[in-house]
Length: 379
Image (tube, rainbow, N blue to C red; front, side, top):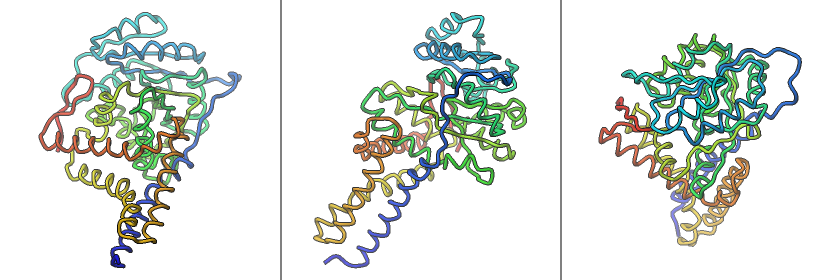
């Protein structure tokens, strides 16, 4: 006979884990969606400058620029800031001149992250009333830019950001990225960014549209020069300044292939969980949360069977049904093959290794590395 206190403790902790995991579903249902728009109306649209910070983006930059050039936006300026690429990135941009302007990035100053330096240079070299910071790996439907600008105007947003549909071409992308999306939703409480009374603040650096006046008011990328998650840091400055922000999911307007193999995905996500403001306590808490909230509830059913507790086994079966069902639903909603939701414990394991690696590298004082550049840690 299992002690009643132990049973109650297991029931209580696993119920908390169930509630926590359910938050992702609630937030996903609250997430606004932006869809394609119809033919261009008679009203004028503000001038728009698109800034792409590109470093070794030979494979992605061409299709992205071609999508931009096909937008048909009436007053569109496109600037590519090349970050000392060692591939054909510059040639790809130059082949689309004069509609695309190339800026050669000077050496990155001390205290700057490369992307922030490039975005700052691009913003200062352009003149549009709105500025769109766009990543080279984003693909755009033909009305994507206009839909975003009209949405920002309707909402009176100083910053408007869109989340794209994930294009997943490999096993690991299909397993990991739906779980990654849940982490983002839950940690940043993403849809609550749209509420003026909320403290939530985040942006997606893949597609961030800003009104120039507000962008300059918060200090632009210069104000977040050493932030690896520059989009989130910038959004927090908007929140502090009381400037309205909007976020939406746009699966029929944007898509992206974020990573092309497991190594690239590991290093890219490691950059996000690690940052330069390393904290061992924060990483340990993250590690404990992954194990306690995602793995341990799956042990309730086998424990109930081993201990011969019908109540515990029944509750464990409920947990399996709810948790695996939730991850299947998230995978389906994100338009990845639904069956990969059954492998969410593998995704958790990937993140456990990711955070443990971050903890080890941070304690060893190893600098953050991304795209061939190294950034010292701030403790």
